[in-house]
Image (cartoon, rainbow, N blue to C red):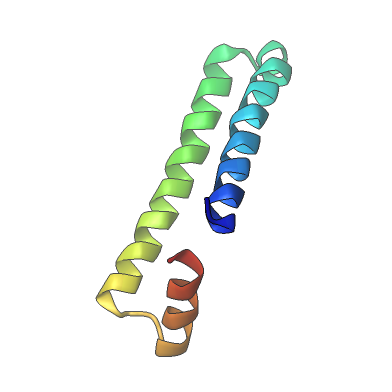
Length: 75
């Protein structure tokens, strides 16, 4: 396994575990419905920003210097 893959796996585990902790702490305070809405809203925002960034990279609308550094980071 490459170090990059191992780091991604550890990050995924931390996010997954953090989600359970967030639910455990947040549900009694906010209630399950509000907590679910917040989680879905945050996830939708992050995915929308990611989609916009990917589209900008593919269409070439970013400057060449920025595009190459972003592409190197996520490939």
